[in-house]
Image 1 (tube, rainbow, N blue to C red):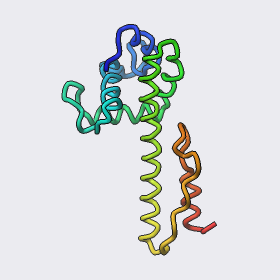
Image 2: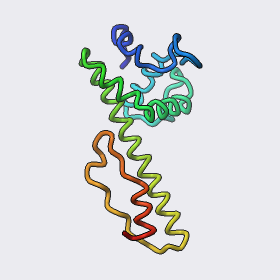
Image 3: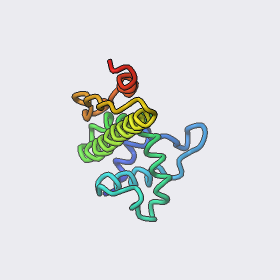
Image 4: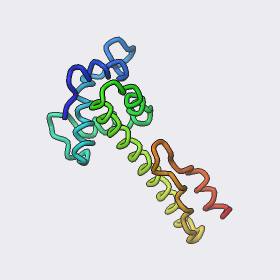
Length: 152
């Protein structure tokens, strides 16, 4: 699925790296959005990206940066005039939220493993807070880390 011309005109003001922005411009923002749609809607791994979309590592890093900056969510919040575009952007925003949740969980597990291996002894992981998988909510990693050290 690709973005049509009308949808593109609605999205263009929200994208980073346009021709009128200072600094580096995105070579082809439209292709980048189509790339992300391909990954999200196909449920594919980044490394399975077809060559016509460019290097998967570049697309992945750019997706991560935009996700951390909240660009996907911002675009989804402002695309309410077009239901199809809204559906596509909501899918990307949900994918980004899930990515952020998995990433924070991996960080927590890595920290717990390091604490265990450093001789603190085997401590159970604190329970995952309710609602962590809801959009925009991630666990408080510092609290979990402190819990391991202080058992409070």
